[in-house]
Length: 284
Length: 257
Ligand SMILES: Nc1ncnc2c1ncn2[C@@H]1O[C@H](COP(=O)(O)OP(=O)(O)OP(=O)(O)O)[C@@H](O)[C@H]1O
Ligand SMILES: [Mg+2]
Image (cartoon, rainbow over all chains, first blue to last red; front, side, top):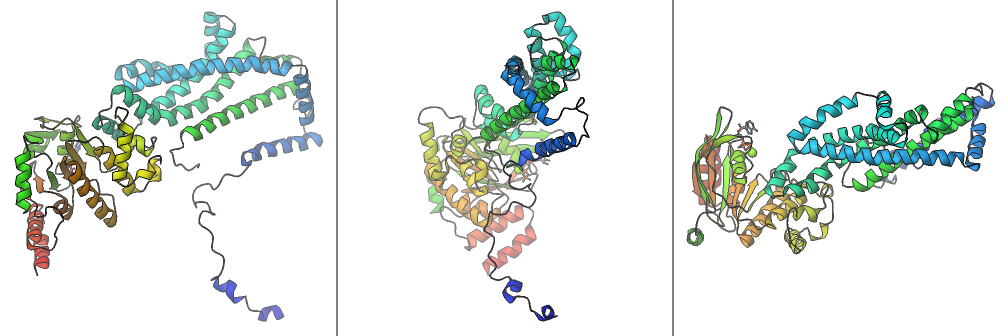
């Protein structure tokens, strides 16, 4: 009963001497807020927790999905006898070579198509057609042309990589503000300087977006070629495990693919943050 | 006094910095400029007034050599070293301030000259900032520095202060007047603001129906003297030419009383 008669503390009601929020301690109202440390790890951790719980409770059939601890032990064995590193090195080499050649081709074609009408007429159509073809559909033809060796694999990866690099760089080039082109004319930039100071930096955001798709595309194409025709590489390791019913090795391979994808995307994003520091966007 | 200085500059002009005769420009069937004539002496500051859509920007673009998507007759006789200050500051967002100022300049001394130009507009210590880190007025000052570092014989400005608040505009007026006095380029300034035109220019011209329908010497030479009868009369005259007769008359009464 006495609580009823108790008055609220006057100063708290008035709020006059409540310590004010220092400016900058609160995020903007519409942006997603400050990035949290390890915030990106939240989703994967929850997934692994569910997987462990399911396996421990016997809800998940080990033959279909091995429990996490078996997968970890298998990964340990594979690393101990050097098999995982060997396959990883073989795959990484193919991915890297394909990425280098594919990126160079995509970039060159995009600049050629972006800077001249003739280039655009020649290049854009065929690339759009290639875009509609899945990498897998080209493998038989590439095998005929290049055999089943490394060349065929690198070419397949490069073909998968160059499409997103081309599309996004070309788009970046075409959407450069015409006002900057006018400015370049009034300060009398030579064509070479115009490309170097206006065109390339203006298309850089598009190019980097293309690179993010490209690294994922590289690993995807790799899975395809290594499972079709290979005697080394992560895809081969998994394909072999399938024939022997070794679920845990398949899962090790999948996890490694996932980590590689995450790692390469992180690298591109890190580069993005470094070289695009002049931008103010929602993300930062 | 005012006339004296103008005579002096007229005497000093070997030949006009800008000479336009019979200029025509059309977008499709619409004639925007129709037989326009204009001379600007070296070092002369001309303000260009006109209704929205009267073709002020079209004229400026013709002078800057930016009229690619327009048909017409006549090429303005303008110097090669023209520099443009756009309505938006138009800085390349991916280049720091100093690199924007010296964009396209050659030579070892270029960056030093860029720094000097930045100092002139009071932004010496911001040379390595990104354009997004500057306020609107600061960006416009950088764009002014970019124009002046080229030491143009002709400075074209298309409503350069349109987006600025009144206080910043006043500061920019002072700055522009000071810089023009120091570098002596011929200037063609497009503006919507009659007072701005009177304050800054030696001569005010009005564009209407493709031609200049008025070409009046500004009463103010050096520091403006608003409130004087000459100022009010010129203001009223210009407003009348812009089709604001009644408003002009009442304003004039106000000032004269
Ligand atoms: N690219 C274009 N295509 C077609 N018409 C155009 C184009 N640019 C300008 N015009 C037309 O030409 C006329 C003159 O345009 P301009 O931009 O020179 O006007 P302005 O005097 O600068 O107007 P404002 O004061 O509003 O800037 C306008 O009626 C406009 O609609
Ligand atoms: Mg205009």
